[in-house]
Length: 384
Length: 135
Image 1 (cartoon, rainbow over the protein chains, first blue to last red):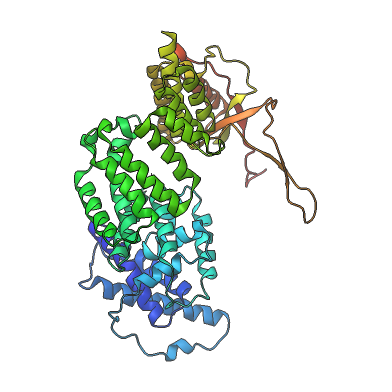
Image 2 (cartoon, rainbow over the protein chains, first blue to last red):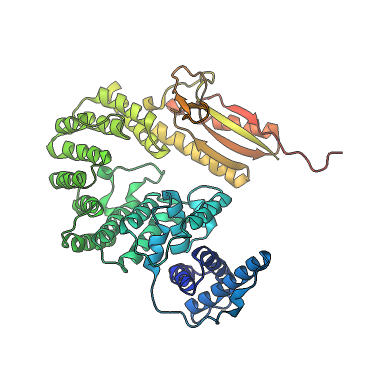
């Protein structure tokens, strides 16, 4: 199937699903029917592309739903009341996609379930694609999704939800990055764009800006051999200036509303990095101020750790180490930050020892390799 | 075809011939080592012998049941644990000889001075399936 058609299919998924729900199908059955219709479209469209793709999908999905409901009813030896229901009319123009976002991110779901359900019901990905992206067997992912659907089966579809929970889910998807044939970061951006087009909310805009600003650096973030390139050493010529410009405009629009939230503040930090032509020209004083705002908004220890790094750049490594000393040493990446600040302070022996210790505690292989390299670099310099 | 587990240890294996910790290597030596590991896995994917590869963080926790209605007991990590697994690769090959050959290649990954580490890897066969035809 051509790429364009797949993108079209995926963008139509949520509205087709909501048409079925509006017609009275329960969410879980409707969602299954839409998946079946998508699979059918992938099979049929390449040879015979419909003139009205959405109408085609609604018709096929509704038929799949009726078929499933009939065989279900037959199995339970019940009277098939659906036979008597009127034939489906034209698809209503009401857009309930927003409700779908709320349902898939419902607070009763665990984060992993909400992520999986969102990718399938809103994103139009197949269970197999989601399973591959999260490196679990397809049967496991299928179970996770069907359990999630059971969990939200009692939730009324037309109830307003909490935007914050939706943003959490999209943020998680974005952070998972890239594995398998689905680019989760790009998918998260697509879903957040779609959301931003439907709801006027500064934090939605803030998250979209944050994603765009980070995505803009993606090409520069890894070396050809797959190793990590830290922000200060990235080739800024490889940053995507169009994405940065878009992110900055969206962020400015959000900040002008004067309803600051954590995603806007995070995006502001990202924008300040994007704005610096070289690492040396970074406005660390302003970045520290944004971390102060973030600490006020979230009181997260991770924010305070990032703030210590920024203080180290703005006021010198000694100030950074003092800020770090106030934090719990068991925080993830605390040791790595300490190593960095000691190196900047000229204490290479301590820095090398801490880099090796940080490598030992690294949360993933890429960071472990990076931290081991830092230790090796300092050890080589000291032995010379 | 038979499946084998190639086990790499942080501790517990006999000492390697080229036993220098990675944080004492040069940047080029680290790059060469990582490249070798990537190439090895990619080659096994191409030959249709690769199944899985995972790496484990060095610190874990011991857990056991502590009776009805009580939370599990946790302990450790124990610094004195003799045997500490670092990661594994699962391969699906035609013979034991082929498994040994591949383990040997993996053990030849370059380390300090660009020379092979000669690291000891543990090779463990999986139990196979009960054949359908037994007589």
